[in-house]
Image 1: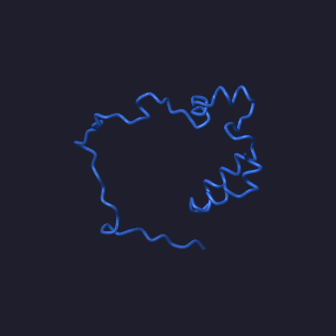
Image 2 (image 1 turned 60 degrees about the vertical axis):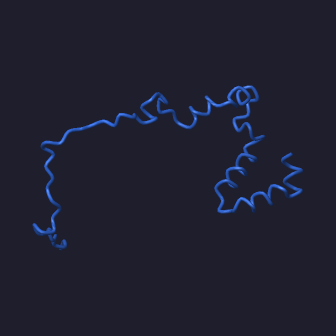
Length: 101
């Protein structure tokens, strides 16, 4: 047997709102989206950055990083819950300096 449904009383029901007499008014300063960015996604924006030519010439899609591994390390460091001082300490380790210099 299905449970019975209890409907709200008139006092509990949300009020009905009439849209009569309302008008739409646009803000005089348009948003950045409407002013010509064209709604580009992240990959499209990457082709407009200063590294586009170097990325295409080198064939390295992770440029300015040397490799996917280096990109993944940088990505992890930026998304980890580490304070900047700890990230700086990590980047100063001899092993990191040798492998990523």
